[in-house]
Amino acid sequence: MSTPFHPPVKRSVEIAGHKTSISLEPLFWDMLREAATEMRLPLNALVARIDAERLQAEVPPGLAGAIRIWLVAR
Image (tube, rainbow, N blue to C red; front, top):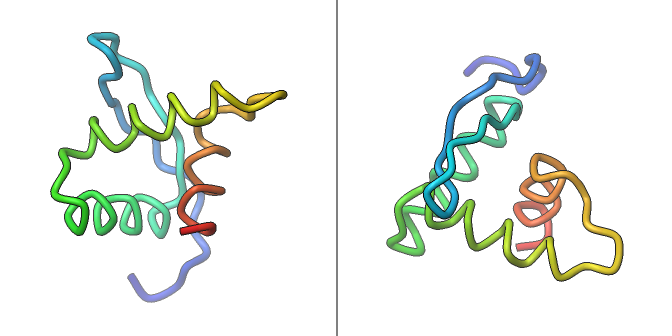
């Protein structure tokens, strides 16, 4: 990718047997795939893990925001 500035791209994922779509900028999709590879997890499993963590927050953010926060914090 030549520039990090790109509108979000919607992709489908499956969490706990339920399909949902997430809109993230391509840069974050790349980072998420890299994290899943490093952790030796399928992408859906990593998203499910992040989803479970976000739901424990006092005021849970949306899933896309939680993924962005998780990626930056790691």
